[in-house]
Every structure is written in C-alpha cells, then in structure tokens.
Image (cartoon, rainbow, N blue to C red; front, side):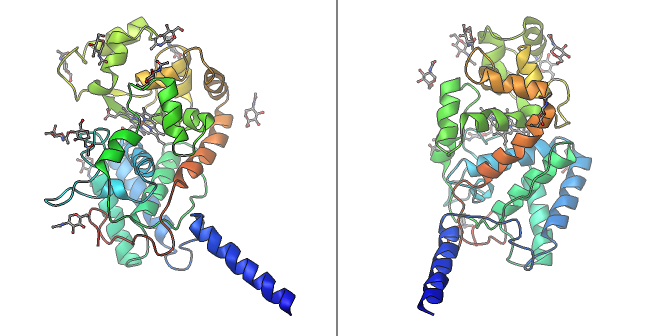
Length: 316
Ligand code: HEM
Ligand SMILES: *[C@@H]1O[C@H](CO)[C@@H](O)[C@H](O)[C@H]1NC(C)=O
Ligand SMILES: *[C@@H]1O[C@H](CO)[C@@H](O)[C@H](O)[C@H]1NC(C)=O
Ligand SMILES: *[C@@H]1O[C@H](CO)[C@@H](O)[C@H](O)[C@H]1NC(C)=O
Ligand SMILES: *[C@@H]1O[C@H](CO)[C@@H](O)[C@H](O)[C@H]1NC(C)=O
Ligand SMILES: *[C@@H]1O[C@H](CO)[C@@H](O)[C@H](O)[C@H]1NC(C)=O
Ligand SMILES: *[C@@H]1O[C@H](CO)[C@@H](O)[C@H](O)[C@H]1NC(C)=O
Ligand SMILES: *[C@@H]1O[C@H](CO)[C@@H](O)[C@H](O)[C@H]1NC(C)=O
Ligand SMILES: *[C@@H]1O[C@H](CO)[C@@H](O)[C@H](O)[C@H]1NC(C)=O
Ligand SMILES: *[C@@H]1O[C@H](CO)[C@@H](O)[C@H](O)[C@H]1NC(C)=O
Ligand SMILES: *[C@@H]1O[C@H](CO)[C@@H](O)[C@H](O)[C@H]1NC(C)=O
C-alpha cells in the first residue's frame, strides 16, 4: 500500500514536472477544442489562395515569436500609448506581416471555443499548415502554450539575428535559444519561401565576394545603393512559393539572397549540411519538422503562467 502510494506521488511529481518543463502535447485541445486544427488549416489554405506569400509570412511570425522570450504570442501585441511591443522592433518593422490573417483565425477559434486556444499555439499551427500547403513536410504540432501579457522591443532587437550576421553570430543566436548548428542550417531552409526587401540584401549584393556576379548585377537593377529600400526579391530565386530544397541548391552556386544565407555555405563547418540537404530533399523533409518542434518548445508559458488572449493584439 505504502508502495502504491509513493508510486502515485512519483507519477504526480512527474506530471507536474512535465508542465514546469514546458512540455507541450499534440492532443492538448482534443477535448476542449477539436475544431482548432480544421479551423486553422482551412483559414491558412484560404489566405494562401488569396496571396501565396502569406504562408511564408506566417511561418516567419512563429520564428519571431519564439526567439523573443519564448513562443508566447508576444510578437502579436500592438503598440499603444502606454505600451511598446515587438512589432516596431528592427527585425519586424515594415517587415513582419500576416497579422490580419491571425486576427481572422483567432476570431474563428473564439467563436468555436471561447477563451481556449492561445495565440502562441495559433502561430505554431499556422506555421505548420503553411509549410504543408506550400508542398513541405508535415509534423504533429505540440500545443499548450499560453500567451504573454508583455513583449520586449529590446529583446526583439537583439535576439532575432539580422541578415548581416556572420556564421558565428548566427550560431550564437541559435545557441542562445537552445538550438544547434544543425537546427540553424535546417530552419534556415525556411528561406525556400517568401521575400526580402532590398534593405535586407543590399550589403550582400554590393559588398560581398561570395555571390554569383550575374545574380548580383540583376538584383542591383532594382535595389540601388540607396533608395528603393522596400523593393522585394525572392529568398529562393527559383521557387519562392514552393517549399522544397532549392534554397540549399542556390547556396551551392552562390545565389543565396541574404548575406546570412550565403554564410551557411562559405567554406566552413555548415557546408556539409547544406550539401546534404541540396542533394537529398527527403533528408531535409525528415529533419525540418524535428527542428521546428524544437524551436516551438522554446520557453513556452504553461500551467497558470500568462493567459489565453481573446484578441491576439492586446493583453486581456
Ligand atoms: C538564420 C537566421 C535568419 C536570418 C538572419 C533571417 C533573416 C530574414 C530576413 C532579413 C528576411 C527578410 C525580411 C524583410 O526584408 O522584410 C527573412 C524572411 C523570412 N524568414 Fe528569415 N531569417 C533567419 C531564419 C529564419 C527562420 C529560422 C525562419 C523560420 C523558421 C525564417 C523564415 C523566414 C521566412 C518564411 C521569410 C519570408 C517572409 C515573407 O515573405 O513575408 N527565417 N528572414
Ligand atoms: C488578400 O491579399 C491581399 C494582398 O495581396 C491583401 O491586401 C488582402 O487583405 C487579402 N485579403 C484577404 C481576404 O485576406
Ligand atoms: C518603423 O517604420 C516606420 C515607417 O517606415 C518609421 O516611421 C518608424 O520610425 C519605424 N519605427 C521604429 C521604431 O524604427
Ligand atoms: C530597437 O532598435 C531601434 C533601431 O535601432 C531603436 O530605435 C530602438 O530604440 C530600439 N529599441 C529598444 C527598446 O531597444
Ligand atoms: C562576426 O560578427 C560578430 C558580431 O558582429 C563580430 O563580433 C565578430 O568579430 C565577427 N566574426 C568574424 C569571424 O568575422
Ligand atoms: C558596404 O560596405 C561599405 C564600405 O565598407 C559600408 O560603408 C556600407 O555600410 C556597407 N553596406 C552595407 C549595406 O552593409
Ligand atoms: C567567404 O569565404 C571567402 C573565402 O574564404 C572569404 O574571403 C570571405 O570573406 C567569406 N565571406 C564573404 C562574405 O565573402
Ligand atoms: C526601383 O525599383 C523599381 C521596380 O520596383 C525599378 O523599376 C527602378 O528602376 C528601381 N530604381 C532604381 C534606382 O534602381
Ligand atoms: C544554380 O543551380 C540551379 C539548379 O540547382 C540552376 O538552375 C541555376 O542555373 C544555377 N545557377 C548558376 C549561376 O549556376
Ligand atoms: C536521403 O535521406 C533519406 C532520409 O534520411 C534516407 O533514407 C536516404 O537514404 C537518403 N538518400 C540518399 C541517396 O542518401
Ligand atoms: C496597451 O497594450 C497593452 C498590452 O497589450 C495592454 O495591456 C493595455 O491594456 C493597452 N492599453 C490600452 C489603452 O489599450
């Protein structure tokens, strides 16, 4: 009897430590909001049908959420007279997008299951559904994150790596989130979809030597040394609306768009991963989900921490 009793206590303790370790679960909403997955999936499909790029934008929002004090929906909070959030931090200002789509999904979730599904989880599901919708691999999204009531512009300024980063800066930035060098190369494969502004790749096309000369000169035609800051170019010059491994193939022939992209294939330890993913899309599709799940596990708020925001733009 005493023995059963202590086993019971151990189980309780194990379950509790699951929560405090921030352990998430794919079944988290299976009884409280079984409609959550179908709602997000249909809304993401509709948003991509309206504008293909939005899938990339939604994937990036989850990344920018997770890298700033954990995956807690902080990136979604609007600035107001008494509050400065992350939307106007350097990596996000005039760049992060998809907020209206998030609002639309959240409104549908609130209608189906009021006060149940967090904005942080919404972003994690929408990121997965975007990747799948654009032809990439699928995975079981872990859920149970709660939403922050605060955000940090200064942490967003410093924790999200800029496109001017060298390899060692990229490695430290990912390492600060508990992500490995392999996770870095794998997650950077997200740049197989979406666009970047002239201001993000100007340095690479004018100052770097590790770029295909004709690729650089064609980009210089619309991205001058100064001005045209918002002119867009595809991160994957070949198939920017299709989730595949051409991002890595581009790096092999020096047609990565960002300085930070080409840093991953410039004669160092990460070259081997770039080569493997360029040669084997199945390998990339096998590893990408693992790294996404790892990124999605970064410091979630669980248990009674945080809240379930009703409006993703504002603390309750
Ligand atoms: C390795 C370090 C990374 C750097 C330095 C970086 C930097 C950037 C930059 C500068 C842009 C273009 C922003 C603009 O000009 O408006 C961009 C776009 C994008 N990034 Fe990254 N990124 C990194 C990693 C990631 C990761 C880990 C993900 C996802 C898991 C991701 C997903 C995306 C996507 C999908 C876009 C296109 C967004 C759109 O078209 O709206 N990036 N990134
Ligand atoms: C469709 O996409 C355009 C951008 O191409 C955007 O301005 C508009 O709000 C989107 N409409 C819906 C219903 O999402
Ligand atoms: C964000 O961008 C807008 C428009 O370009 C600019 O006016 C504003 O100063 C920027 N905010 C910050 C904090 O850099
Ligand atoms: C973030 O960076 C921008 C641009 O450098 C700067 O204006 C702003 O003060 C920074 N914000 C914080 C809180 O660090
Ligand atoms: C990489 O960038 C960091 C931060 O900008 C800098 O301190 C460091 O010297 C650079 N390392 C190399 C090898 O260029
Ligand atoms: C390119 O290099 C020049 C000269 O070193 C420097 O002044 C400029 O800031 C660099 N441009 C970018 C966008 O990095
Ligand atoms: C890339 O590698 C070359 C050759 O090692 C080196 O000269 C260069 O500084 C590196 N980085 C860039 C951005 O060209
Ligand atoms: C600015 O971009 C437009 C295309 O959006 C292009 O037609 C124009 O030539 C560019 N201007 C410069 C000075 O590069
Ligand atoms: C780079 O590789 C891709 C295919 O992997 C090819 O389509 C493209 O033409 C190559 N570009 C150059 C400049 O070699
Ligand atoms: C490609 O990667 C997959 C998944 O890891 C593996 O099963 C397969 O053997 C690899 N193919 C080649 C040709 O290496
Ligand atoms: C400003 O935003 C913060 C964070 O979302 C929120 O707590 C606060 O209530 C907002 N203030 C107003 C006046 O809306």
